[in-house]
Image (tube, rainbow, N blue to C red; front, side, top):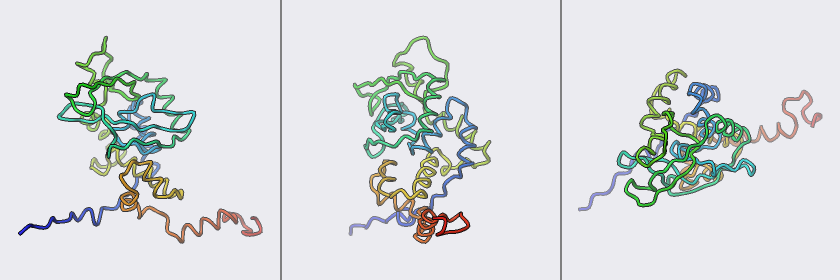
Length: 249
């Protein structure tokens, strides 16, 4: 008799996401060395995944139009770094807030982008791509660029996480657990958008999820209740903070 596959409980009853506070995000940002601080702006302000931040190139930033073009990530395949498409093989465009654009501009003025050559998708791929990455390794710059050590310029999460991210978590008083990885910045981003009234379909598109239904399952508990939306709508219209209510409006 064919056995039925057992449904994973986590898919039916996912653990509720608890977003970081603004103070915690700020503490993480300034706890990192200056070279990596703008990563927090990208994660919390645009919702990029860690690998997408590592793979961001100068050409992906449209400051005038107000967009970030998420076209690739840096990932590990068989212990080597490669470029590849974002998760779910979905490229996307994400609104670029002015504050994040300023942070990226200041970062690139301080830390010049470095052309990095990596294979595309697999370590043995014949295709190589060279891109001026916005974020690169803090190792001293070699005298010349070659494929032999090009991988040292792209950031490897296996060294970045313990050396930089985990140390910063401890300084901020946060435990070094899976829930406090860089992915927590995406949860913060989603919570801010939902609290501001953004619709779930747009949030799903900006995060690069495979469906709006998935986004809803993960973040439904963060969406303002209908009663809160009603109060906010009337207060916004009639001036809820004023002394005269409708008279003020």
